[in-house]
Image (cartoon, rainbow, N blue to C red; front, side, top):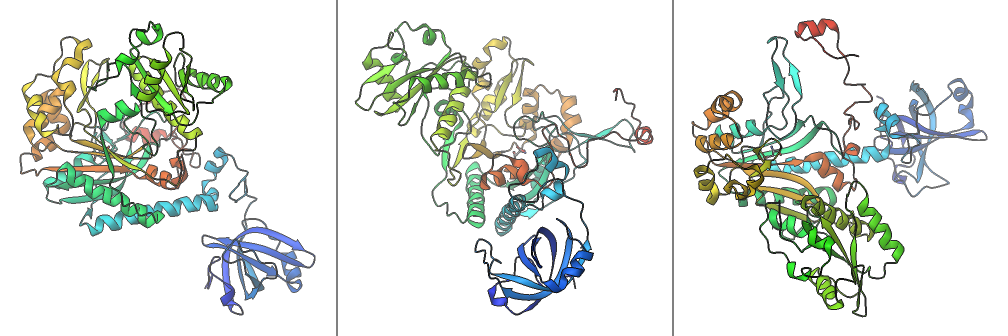
Length: 609
Ligand code: ASP
């Protein structure tokens, strides 16, 4: 037997017991004739005491960091207790020991505050995984996995595996492809999601399906993305949007409870996509704090039909606002006393290329009720106050205003809102706020390609009362610049996203389940009949054999874990992640393959290596 206990198990109540432990050497400390070794395994750390009588054997078997060691001895009370760790009251008085394996000197310290940089830790990920901080993340990941499975199992869902070697599924990214040796010149695609399979399972009658499953998307890895990532993928038959929303807010609440001990009893807020864009400049707003956007110009290029407060800025002769497509404002609480230096710094912040604004206007709504602004020349104090109050400001607040092209300005005000919240400490890691964003546009117009594209994916159904609009209108557009006038621009989808603290953690839709409507959808996206049959003949065919109404959702599992773990990075929650260039630093993959393999696959390369 290699061990009787783990390194995290023994307590003062075990005093006097004989024990055998096995683990890795964390530290070796020599004090005169005696030696202390901290022995570590997945469960914790236990202090070992090697008395004088073992000195000779220790000398013959010099011990180093990360050696694999087995010891037998008895549990005794420590004189110098460490109450920060659960085993800190005891130590093992070693009687015999055995080095089970040696270790080379590790390239970085296996400690929470390691001296290893990112690249090095990724190259030696198997060592990095020994660190407590990383282990905790994987434990949390497993806890989320378990909580989701338990919940879904209790709700009657079945975990059904779907294949990885398939044909393209359109989730808006490029496919990873795999050449087929047995079918020369042909390729499988790796699934961007199991979308079509889960829909086929509904046709087959498995009315509650889930899978915690890998998805593969060949995207540029900006921000915090991974080419392969995990989804909690779900589908239900005989459901309406409301059923899905209830079922899956239940799941997320169960995860909160099981993993974080949080009783999320409040109803999950809901917001339409239009409201989200209008009030937050963003379709995944963080609603832990206010600072809603005040819109002062009519929307030009987004699919939003709202009334702005134009009268507040019109007629003042302020060219910056008059000439801008979009003018927006937010009220930042308690910042009216910002100094010149601080407002200058904020101006520089919005001018950075990532934000791309030309400048920043502000109104200080002072605690005494007076207003001071960078636009004093154009607006009376009453006007300034009216703008500030329309933005939701109270005395003591600072109103920040941006003007420019619509899309960019909306994104900029959203970024600025998040930045200010961050600076004010309003984005607390221990606060969780869920939100459903509903009624997304069904289509987006790709001006470059001059065609409609599906905003979610082509299997998403329009709102029931807009199906007619879709069927009875011809998708083609004569004048691309006027696409917003086309009836398709106003069709809303039966689609929903779940947002947690400003992150989209899940998204799904009620699906089209009639062949005719699905064909119409494909046609709207520019697919002729031949292409439809080539790409999705199997699904259209299945819809002829009694497809039930159905809908579903998929959650970004890695992201959900990262947020629950209080981290910005999903990589920290993946055992073997890839770097920003999509490389596995440990395996050194992707890599070239042998000429022989290329020949077998009938592939000739056209790259210089
Ligand atoms: N397949 C979709 C996605 O990956 C989710 C869904 O519609 O269920 O985003």
